Length: 238
Image 1 (spheres, helix red, strand yellow):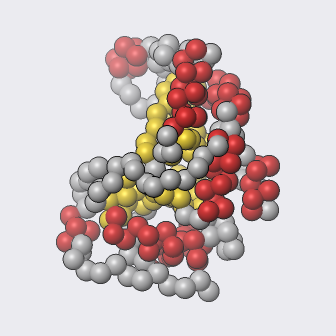
Image 2: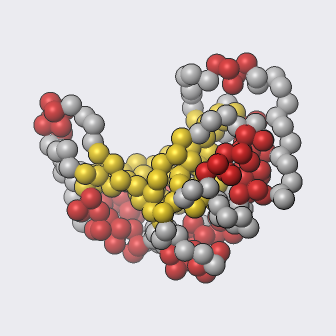
């Protein structure tokens, strides 16, 4: 199994160190953590055995084998199936911008790249760009120059500091911006290349970008109307 997955974990903030310790044991020490709150109605919370306590959300990259192992450990050791403990889920990934970035995310999971075989033929992709906080304008300027529309920013903190310093010579423990951009699949490569060239590791943004397949959309009619137009060519790095 050669697939890669974007893994999301949501759990109570007080219990989150237990999740992180488990993930480190299986090579998932690289992640980005954001803080959040539950929004479900009181009746639903009661039904699920949940409360309105503060939550932590962790984004990681996992191989198929790693996910199956971690899922089993979450169920057996952390009892994630017990209401109120947390939830974890995966979404298949399309690509990661750059060989060094791919190795950074997967080095300790024994991943070997093969032909992409997950969710081919989708019309849209979700681009996820992780950059130093305060440089999202640089990222979006690069993305727009290659045909992207708007994006949504989530503030997070990076983990996996030692590995980041080994690969990039930087620290990921500082505050990060996580930018989500939905774009047409035909424009994906140009946008990713533009972000890597103008806002990548050689820029102040230190951005990492990867993509997830989107099965369907609503609210992107204007983007669909522009589908017949050729995607702009990514501008060279300056």
